[in-house]
Length: 135
Image (cartoon, rainbow, N blue to C red):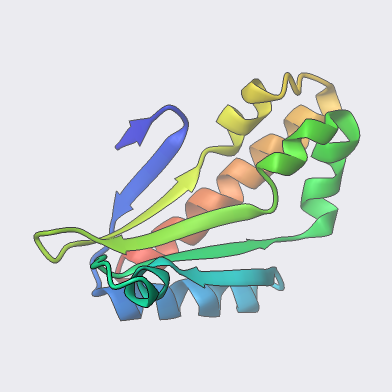
């Protein structure tokens, strides 16, 4: 499923397992987890229901800085983010912004930026597949 640069993959696992797998993979790859935002916990603080929804913000200055050097506005979309969420049918999903969409959004056409974006897109896809499918 892809809508306006958003890639969404169904997980073979439950919500907690998908989140744990993603965090373990990020750590193993040496990526920095800058923040984890529990949207459902925030909703609960104002007495509003929300199914499990956690945003993981992660990345690597080595990967993101070349994009920001080419177009500083790309910093609005960096670091990368993955949203783990459970729908009304109790199915768990992982969504993320396609780096190629981010590059188009910010007009990143320089050869070094294109190479960085392609590497980022391939790595992010591999991370998402690893977090959502049984190996």
